[in-house]
Length: 79
Length: 318
Image (cartoon, rainbow over all chains, first blue to last red; front, top):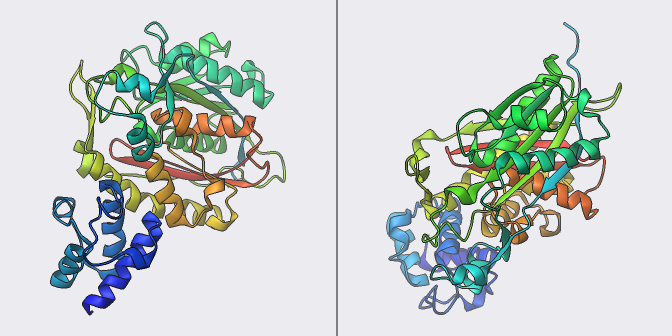
C-alpha cells in the first residue's frame, strides 16, 4: 500500500466518522486543532483503520498520533 | 414435545425523579461545562433522586405504569424481575418489596444484576420463563439510583450517571400470533471486568472511559446483528433501535455500524443521562408516549456495560 492509498483511505474514514470533507484531510492536518476531532473520535478512527488496513492502533499509541501524517506513517510502518 | 408458548410485550412504563440537574449545575461542582458535556456525552440534563427516594420507589412507579399500559391486573402477574445494580442494601431484594407494594399476590420475585445489560437479560429470562411454563405474566423492571454510587468530585462520572426506572410486562402471545420477543443473545467479557468497577463497600463507580468506548463501539454491533439474525430480521427491518443510553457518541457509532438511520435511534440520554438498566425501558416508554414507536414492527434492544456484559434481542412493539 502506498502512502497515498493510506491517506485517501484515512480521509474516507474521517469523513464518515467526523463529517470532515475528505479534501480537507491533508497530511499536515492536526486532528485536534485543524480537524476538531477529539479523543473519542480518534478511537473510532483507529477501529475503522484496523478494519480497513489490518493494522491495530492501541489506545496507548493513539495519543502520540497528532497529525494525519502520523497515522499514515504508523499504518505504513506496521502493515 | 408440545410447542413452546409464544411471548410478547404488553406495554411499557417509565419514571424519572422530579429533580432536574443541568450541565450548568454540574459545572458548579466540578471543572466542566455544558458544551463539553453535550459534545462528549450528549447529555443536556438528567434526573437525580431525592435522598429519601429509593430504588424500590422508582421501580414501583414505573412498574405501576407498565401494568396500566398492559391492561393487566396485578393479580395476573406471577413473576417480578427487577434489573438493578444500585440497591442500597443487599437484602431484602427490591423485587419482592415492589411486588407487594403493587398488590401483586406472592409472585416469584428476584433481582438481576447485569449492570447496564440488565434489562435485556431480564426480558430474555422473563420470556424464557413464560415459554417454559414457569410463569404466566412477568413484570420486568429496570430501576437504578446510580447517583448513590457516584463521587461528585469525579468529573468523568458525575456528569454521566443518573436515576430512573422503566418497566415492561411480558406475557403469552395470542394463539396464532407470531413470536413477539426474539431469542436473546447474551454474553460477557470478564477479562475486562476491571474496566467499570465500584471501589469497595462505600465506594464510587469508576471506569476506564476510553477502553469502554472502544469496546462498545466494536463489540456491540455484532451482538445486535446476531440478535436480528436469530429473530429472522435484518437491521433494515428495525423501526426503532434502542441501545443502552450510555453515551450519545457510542449510540450513534453503533447505529452507524448497523446502518440504522439516525431518526430510528433512541437518544433518551439527552434528558435522562445514563441510568444503567433503566435506560432502555425508560427510552421505550417515552418513545411510546410520544408516538415514536410503530406497533407491530420490530424494535432492536441492546444493553452493554459493567461485567463487562451485554445482551440483545428484537421485540415486537406492542
